Length: 250
Image 1 (tube, rainbow, N blue to C red):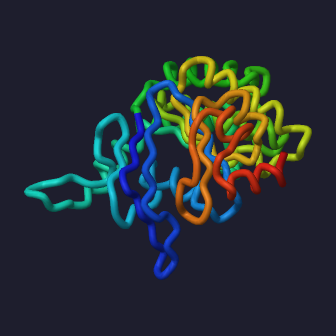
Image 2 (spheres, rainbow, N blue to C red):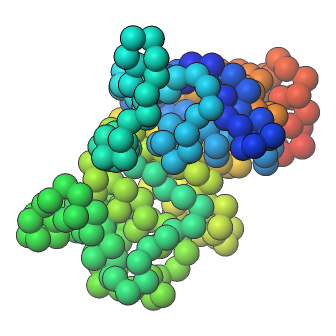
């Protein structure tokens, strides 16, 4: 479903991704772990074309993202074509970014109405289904200010799901939440994983990675240091840097 081939990303002089190679199969849950500043969030932003890679290739479902190759030369896609590619990918951020003047239901309906051109009735019906999926059908008419942080993040997940994505990206979705609210968001993500959704998750929740991930990827300083099953990477790491990291966080 996702393949990164020798991906580099530079911000000026700062070399954030240094030749990343990653493969995530359809239906797989891949969790990216590592210290802050290791390039995890930048990597998933490159998958979704929120950041343009500096070198390498990024593929989603076999399609080259952001570029087309003609005569051995790469050309940047138009904004319209990039938006088309991005529409297949759902993304949930640290901050919920809900429209404050819209109810939970209206927030979830907005993109299907504007982007997928759904009718009002179809978008409303689908939005209610997604809110029920995240356990918030009884909060459909509440505004973001009337919801807890965990509830707002679950609305954000429902909003992403309403676009019927083939791939879901999560960028530290629980890091802005009070500790007691983390579990309700992780529970929704566990249900998504169980349903077969392809997911790439940047998180510091090692317990979630151990329980849900098919593949755990440990990153440090812009490279993938170690990858494998949770049992291999978390419980029996082979790399000294990986062992040192988990000795401090577990």
